[in-house]
Length: 232
Image 1 (tube, rainbow, N blue to C red):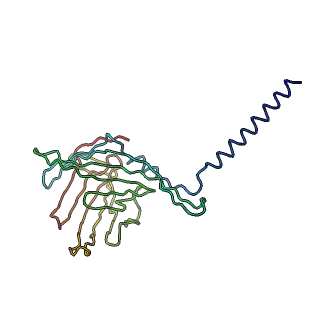
Image 2 (cartoon, rainbow, N blue to C red; image 1 turned 45 degrees about the horizontal axis):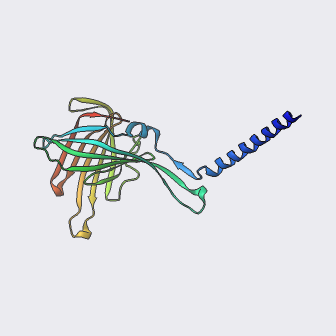
Image 3 (cartoon, rainbow, N blue to C red; image 1 turned 180 degrees about the vertical axis):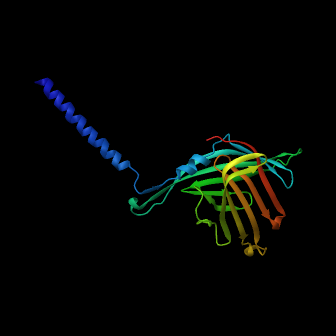
């Protein structure tokens, strides 16, 4: 009899404990809506430290090394009065350093670039401009990027190349994106900063070609990918 009562007590105790655990899990469960990074974008472009790209500027002959220094995942959350209306947005921010390595003597100034991802958008900030977004991925069916930086920036997705050659290397399914426009500098009594830039993007290797055409600072670069290593 004593054994039966003991077993019954233990069963009831375990049942109550399980109910408490379920209740606690419900209290701690994140409320609201989660917006995750597109799975295809994340799989293709989630670069980790150890990733690098070597580009040669076909105009000047200069060679630069771009390498990932940091990969930081985060979640940005809104804080409405009702927690059920909160939006939790997954973000990945990738820091990239750019340093000239040839010809010798090289310019050792390090420029900082940033790639960041949210939803289907890929954002790029260079030492010159920000492209918000530089493109969406998967590549858009509409030519005009839906979330461009400002009315002054006309970001357009122009084409997908089934096969694209750069510096003797062949890449498949390369998207071509054009950003042209101007940066309003009227508040500094300077003329608007105009640009006409191109990006050729491969899911396998990242940017395989980048053209920067910035007349105000006499900057014209045609960076072509020479070799690379991707770490994900």
